[in-house]
Image (cartoon, rainbow, N blue to C red):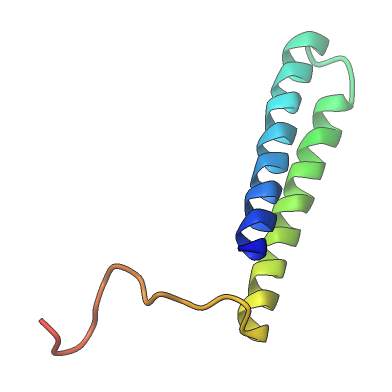
Length: 75
């Protein structure tokens, strides 16, 4: 349950960063660097989350469900 909460928290922060970049883009009209900095934060957080998910998978904290597509002679 804690792992799911951490993942959701990261996604909320990433969406907040994306939304604030949009607000700064509209407010500054291309004059400031705030949009660039927020988008760089979003990219960094997204990469960190991806690496953290890979780490959690390797440690066995999360498991793959196999996905919706079943391969083989099962049906």
